[in-house]
Amino acid sequence: MKKILTLMAVAAMAFTACSKEESTGTGDKQVRITPTIANPALTPASMSSGTRATDTDFELNDKVGLTITMTADGSAFVANKEMSFDGTDFKTEGFLWYEDVNATSTLFAYYPYQAGAAAPAEFSVKADQSGANYTASDLIVAVKTGVKPTLSSTQMTFKHKMSRIVISVTNESGFDITDIVIKGAVGTGVLDPATGDFTAKAGAEASDVTANTATADKVYYALLVPQNGVQLKVTVTTADGKKRTQTLGTTDLKSGENRRMDCNVQPADIQVKFSGPIAGWVDGDDLLPDGEGEVETPTIEWGGVKYKIVTLKDGRTWMAENLRYIPQGKTVSSNPADGNGVWYPCNLSKAADQSLVETAGLLYSYPVLLGMTGDMTDTNFDQYEGAQGICPDGWHIPTMAEWLKLAGTGSGNLSDPTSPYFDQTQSGGSIVALNKDGFNIAGYGYINAANATATPAYMATVSAADATAFGMGYFPSSTGYKVTYNTADDPGSGIKNIQYYAGMITYNKSYNRMTIAYQGGYCAAPARCIKDKE
Image 1 (cartoon, helix red, strand yellow):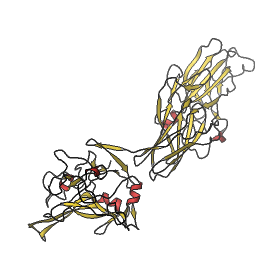
Image 2 (tube, helix red, strand yellow; image 1 turned 60 degrees about the vertical axis):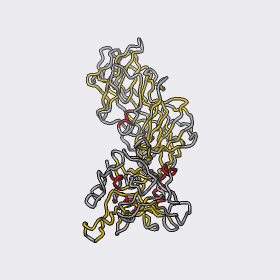
Image 3 (spheres, helix red, strand yellow; image 1 turned 180 degrees about the horizontal axis):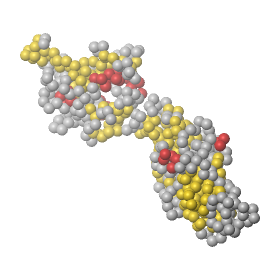
Image 4 (spheres, one colour; image 1 turned 30 degrees about the vertical axis):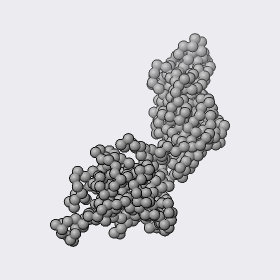
């Protein structure tokens, strides 16, 4: 909207050389500025943010800078005089008009005030316009010529100098928006105090502007320096870490112009366009997207490999790929029975297949996975819950509870009714829903050993729904389940098996789900890492 204010410079003075009409004045000689709104109806009721761009008046202790330039010789009677709002007037104690009531001058006033010997020659928008930084970016200027000291008011019209974008969001991504950034526009302009003109600074570099949140996930504001021939890019970041970018067509950004940008954030894309202007601002031409939108997926680097990461509806950040990390001192083996601890994945024919590493990751034994300092025993197997293991710093091997948050249900009457992915028809966590949110989970082979004395071997099942796909698999957790002995409750008889909780995926004609099950501690499987709670 185009906001119009009235500046009232009240000179209540008793000049020794005044006209007949003014000779009777006996007021103080202070320069006072009384701002009013000439057209308050232009402020939509829905805009309640406490900023100059949306409020109907100045707020207590707001500050403007005033410059008074004499017409006769171009000298400054006062330059960049700070004036504070007391609820009614802008004023500075002891600030008096010049005494020659017949001498004319030009009044230049601007908001927000910047300290200095003169009014700023340049003005920049804030890179991050959240909160008070949005107000600090809203340059408002008024200029009036031929002004004389008088007992009556001097009215001046204030105008917005920036170009404003109101971003109206339709968010279908399933995640909250963390920020909206507009790229490509020069962030600094040159201000002419004689005319009030404000234009982009020649040769200045483009800067990124983070929009102000007016209504979370719905409405955002951005103030940009007016300029010609600019091509903007709009990047929307959601809570899962994804960045969706849309390039707009080349356009001119005009001072005082307001445009609405319609932004549709989809699970895998963003649609952005500029539509008609908001009433009260100068009409601007429509801007349309230019080219396809793109999605930037966040990553973490570990062991020389970049892994995609994703923040799911459980509120936690997960790796969206299986680990391919080779611990120090380890090599990758193709023989499940060699006790190596790290193996290549297998194909549906139950044979080691190096070509699958990129998608399936490597297979890890529990001692290697959890970073055990020695062998797995009946006294230490359950001492590694939440361990970092082979994950990067700040990450760890998921616990049973963290897998259960995704699955919603599991063996032994395990249940988490707060799981955002539990699907009653699937009797578990929907892999379709998980993958829609970017978890990228798929079937794979693993290494199976039924007990402590069994010979480990590659295991792979074919999906009954798709003969080219794996039908089941496991994701280990760091939570130990139980140990069994050759003779019940007799450790002296030797360990029969050690079991851990694991996320089990099932893909067949009936189910495409994840549940919580038990996996033998002498098995090996692909691994995922989860970020530590912050």
